[in-house]
Length: 155
Ligand SMILES: [Zn+2]
Image 1 (cartoon, rainbow, N blue to C red):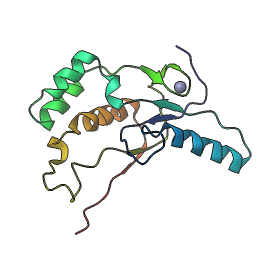
Image 2 (image 1 turned 45 degrees about the vertical axis):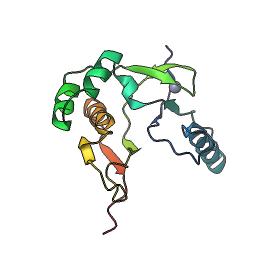
Image 3 (image 1 turned 180 degrees about the horizontal axis):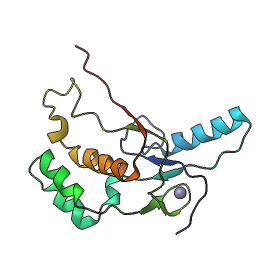
């Protein structure tokens, strides 16, 4: 495991079939390259990790999946220790996930919140696991400012 300096972190959760790279990793690197060109400064390559749930052990992920409701999932996640390293696609290594940043800008899966989904279940839906894991991560990191993007109801 290496300690890469001046870390930035991206956890890619959602996939869209229109992206060239279905994991959006190329977009992150394209933006990094663009900001470096725009600012005439070479910025440190951001860490790009995979799914947030990979910060849980296989056993804990299975337990979480089988909890009956979101309240029980939160209770379980509160008792779990998240992994402090996760594979990083930028550096081809296991980079630290315990780096704190001043600002977190996230977009969690929104299908369970969308008005277009007539069977939406909000936190009780299929994305409750990453929601509570994401919250636990920022509770541990004590992230001072979080911007969570989501689409509001149209009506
Ligand atoms: Zn990395």
